[in-house]
Amino acid sequence: MKSASAGDLERLEVAVLRAARSIRRAWNERLKPLGMNFTEGSLLWHLRDKGSLSQTELAGRLHVGKAVLGTYVDGLAERGLVERNPSPGDRRVWLISLTPAADQYVDAFEEVDKKLRDDLRSGLSRDQRHMMAEGLLRMESNLSAEKPSAVDS
Image 1 (tube, helix red, strand yellow):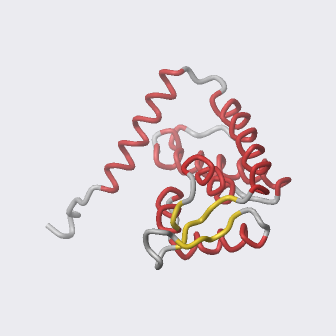
Image 2: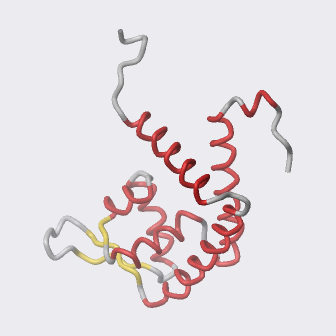
């Protein structure tokens, strides 16, 4: 692994972006033998965890647009891992559900998740992980809050 220069260490944002890219790449490499990527695995996991969800709910949970999510759902449906069913409460809404064939994929996703978390957390104390999580959540919150820019003032 390439070590960071002193200038890079002063740039928290750069470190966060590089770490996020590395983590996503690690997920996708470890899921490649299953024929899926991180987003597809997460989609299946959310359906197992929460049950049937609308495309809008899934898009929100995965932080992707509804159209992008629709592409993932289409691919997983073609593989027989999910299906669309009409919502009993609103005929305009389709609920996405797992099929029994998805069970082995979600199980494998959970195994990859555990191993990757162990690898990622190696050498970090619980307190360090907690501080990092709090800091990242604060940064996300700071960006999601509507604040006038200096140009607007």
